[in-house]
Image 1 (cartoon, rainbow, N blue to C red):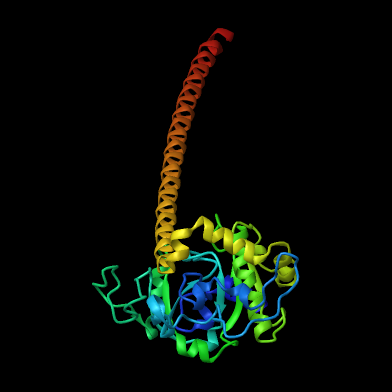
Image 2 (tube, rainbow, N blue to C red; image 1 turned 180 degrees about the vertical axis):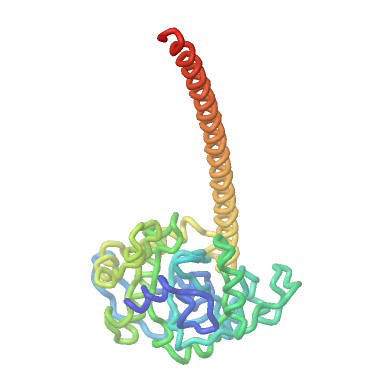
Amino acid sequence: MPEIRNLFTHGAPSNSLVKVGLLVHGFDGTLQGGGNNAGTLTEYNVTGDKDSAQVHVPLPWAPCNKGWCENAAKWLSTSIVNKEHRAVFSDGCMILKPGANKVLCSHYYDFGSLTTGCTGGVNRDHTGDTPFPAEGLKEMLDVSMTYKQAYNEVLVDSKVYKSNLPDSISAFYYGLLPNDGNSTWSRLHTTAMYVAFIDHYNLTESQVPLVEFALDNPDSHGLLTDVSGGARKFLKAHPYGYALKKWRDEHPELSEHPENIHLELRNQADMRRKTGHEASSAKKEVRVVKNEAKAEAVVKAAKVVKAADKEAKAVKADAKLVKAAVKPAAK
């Protein structure tokens, strides 16, 4: 956990993944089972009892390898976040380990990589320049840091990621989207996958943590919290099966067509970016107005001071005249 906190706090543009911040993959439907089968490995039923692990089920942290998302088996879409650049695609999922993953290419905004990977253009119609190569990661991040509202996209080699499992995952997380960060579904979805992961590989909570982000916390240390210890208790109190059914009932179109999940998340990200840009512009306008008002107040104050100074000089001059007139009379 200290290493994860340090990476987030001190991450900066570099060609080395161990220096840039956190490499995160958010839920986007491109994992096996659409990411919605975490509970099938370590399901908690309505009584809070743990069902026996099932076999021959998709691993919810493994890249999709068939159908509309089959290219995820070649490259996995991620983003780099740190204290100075927090924009992401979705609220929660996995933090990848820097030394166990390999960058293929990147760009400072979403370049719709699902079908073309590193070979297509960066515009959404796949035209224009190609993404930054692996050795251009620092150059990309230098630009990305100037666009605070836009998440960057970094493609990593899925074969390297999968061959290094479970070591290729440092942690699981939720809470990177301020408005959705602690929603029950986001937290539950991630927590179910987290428990399934550590149980499947016989790991402990201390080896792979579950991280809760609280980006509105004024205390830098409190931006990340290790909540691994309460993961199982949370699942018992919030059965995954119930929550998944509720999500499917509330999102029938996405449930039936998981290929639209990443498109819906992209639209939501666009709205957040637009709203963030408008909010930022509004703040700038407020600052300009305040500065103008402050400048006007300073000018007025200067005029008052100048008038008072002028009046004081006039009074002083009158006093000299009176003094001059009085002296002869006294003689």
